[in-house]
Length: 314
Image (tube, rainbow, N blue to C red):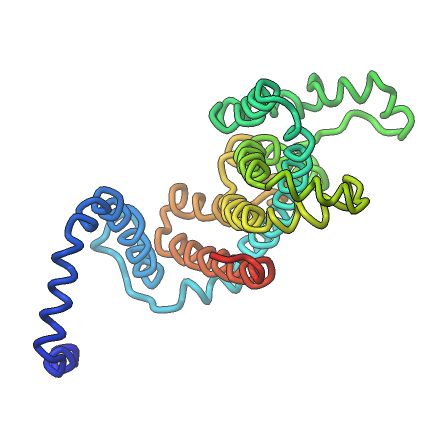
């Protein structure tokens, strides 16, 4: 069918297409160092994962059995996977808005400061990003420890436990506090990049707009809502989408601090994929979870672009 279609293309059109490709050969050469690894490490694994999701696959490829959609049918009956999906959505709804609000208002507050204070605050917020999840995870495990953790010590010193009539809290061992505790950890090490992006975007807003707003009698709050926030819409959209994708892949903090517990209260989709793929060696089942995750993330990204990208010019 493809050969017949190509046969109907006039020779002149084919020749022009080849000439355009030849003229742009240097462009293709320059993008090859990035495009070839993209094909090898992104596109190929994606296609292989999709293919693997239709198999009952273990360690030995010789024993793989094609089972069609059975893995997906089994997922609909997997209560723990349903919990992991719900938990992942909770992580997104807690972490993403909190991170955006905190970094946006922090950027607005420190933007009028000089370059020195700005650079120091940038470094302070970005330090957790480059410190490594293992180091930060160990620090937060100590902070949340029930018996000798810093958080319980501070709250006890302030007398809050006595006021509330409760004892020391096991922040990572309680089903009601574990997910929120992990969300706080993730928020603490994801503020660096959005803050830098918002500061850069604020630097691109002309000061003349704020001067005109002052002449018209607008206060700082009105200027923020009428000038700053609308002009930050492209950056906000970018941060919103990238942060959402990142939180949907939450894994390291769960592996280090709770291993999905207690009672699956902190399970996430990626951690569930890790369990089935690298602990239980059910590669096909794990691949099916990965496909579901891809569908969910893509759907959420489309909704975000539809709702937030109406006035953004790409």
